[in-house]
Length: 98
Image (cartoon, rainbow, N blue to C red):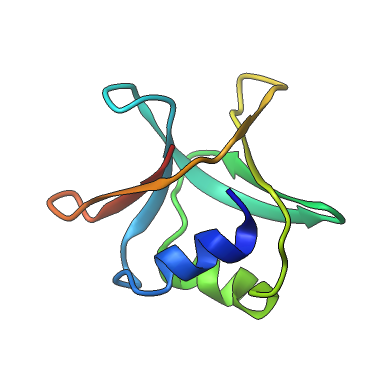
């Protein structure tokens, strides 16, 4: 997934939804706590406290025209994973990248 696509998808979500990464549909979820744009890629880092949609839009909203790939880094791994989509859980008030 590219950054401009991700921002378009989450722009209509409720601003207080928290953002997580989930390795599979039934797998554990990891809070996205840090976002970094490095030249030709956007990196999402997992941590202890999840960022909200409002915080993400505030940080990245000006980059809507940025057609760069989005990757997630898990804290316990040096590997980066591509983001392929977004899943929403309204009961928990969370959005997940997959």
